[in-house]
Length: 106
Image (cartoon, rainbow, N blue to C red):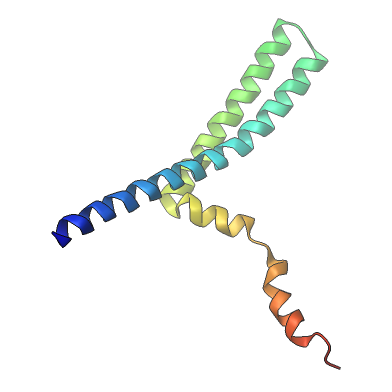
């Protein structure tokens, strides 16, 4: 009975980890995609004709492709959550405890 319970718990954890990795993958893809979208939008605003639209769509597509390649490489090497946690960490908080310990001392 406990073996069945452990297996279902492992499956849920595996599914939960997979969902989190996919969400991290989407966050990594979103960055170059948004950059490409912004550049493409600026190109289209400066040239609002068919040529500008084609260039804008091309730039956005290149941003999407770069994002997909980047996110897939990160997922295979380190895992998206490990990568995002290192990128988004704040070094300022590492010294917060040291500052509180020394507060009020001369």
